[in-house]
Image (cartoon, rainbow, N blue to C red; front, side, top):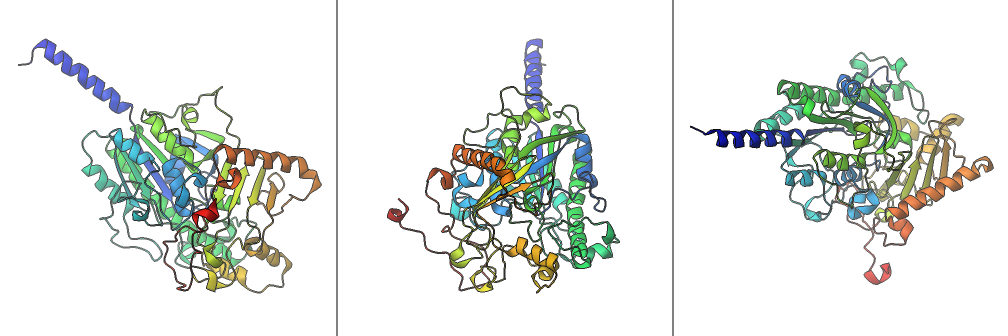
Length: 508
């Protein structure tokens, strides 16, 4: 029989263990693939049905100014995992590349703290892990054994929610977890007509002004909606699972997307349709005054230091992301800079230019303006119209093939459609400036308008300063190699090649 002294010690140790566990919340990170900000019910869409996102927003915090770090899958996910802007990540600044192992990731840091990590669906991707010295996806151990008994065309047959359940069953008892639930939806391709078949009303679709308002485009958007809803259904099932296991309130649940919708002048561009993403965070034990709406500017790279701080660890000094802790706690910080801008960038997407070149650009987004620097304005921003110089062997290959793209590529006599074609496929100037109050869809570049000269100078100065502060080699005079890093994607055009890496002497 235990004596009083021993039982007292055990009780104290149990209390300490319980307290430590309570201080280490679980993390469920839910990320869709190619979803723009507007396309959730909570963010105002009248057609789409997203009860899971809407619940997270209602019971947590909904962010109105969340932006990806890059409007391209691999770089955006690399930024999320490392908490760093893409220009700091070497090869990981490109899609179909690698994430070098010397860059710390939040799942690895949390594992050292005692977390169990895992992912299902699309984690870090697309690219080749081995080339960067990794043997496992940086999102964690993969869970993919469970599949849907019946799947719809264009939608993966992976049962993401059941794979999350399998992960929970296998984790050690009482161990905190960090799980990445990443769907392949709403990435193309889609089952054409799926939205109409589901009974969705095309007349209620809000068509971005950068796209032609036609039945073809409205139907294409409805098809995209059905895949966003598939993602949301998986999140809803994951939430129910956490409730059943009495884990929901001690779990930080994040719902977002890696970047914007796969349409012309959206994905793979720095405009809001490509970079403005939905973001809602619920944490029953940690979000103070839930139900709030935050207009603070957030980059998705801010999530890594947020997760790390929530686990009681100081984020590594190399992380450029800023923890959202003060927002979750509803605290006003007098020491932190105000969150009044987001930084966005792109290097090489699919290399749809001769020599595998990218379209390097940087942007600063504030509440009033979007300012963009295009470093190589002589290059085709959406890929060369000549399919023979594209790794994907399609014209304007940075833009996914779709009914909308096909419509917009047709020869047009209509002046408005010609304008949209130019905006989607044509050359862009070295600088772009958009006044969001009068031009929320960023259709009219006012960089050359004397009325905006002071704003242009101020934003240019600020963007360059922030890029220098965060060691962007395009501003610091460092070596710039993104055009020459290997491309590990499937090359439909067998003659396509990346130009050879310059010699070391040529780089100096």
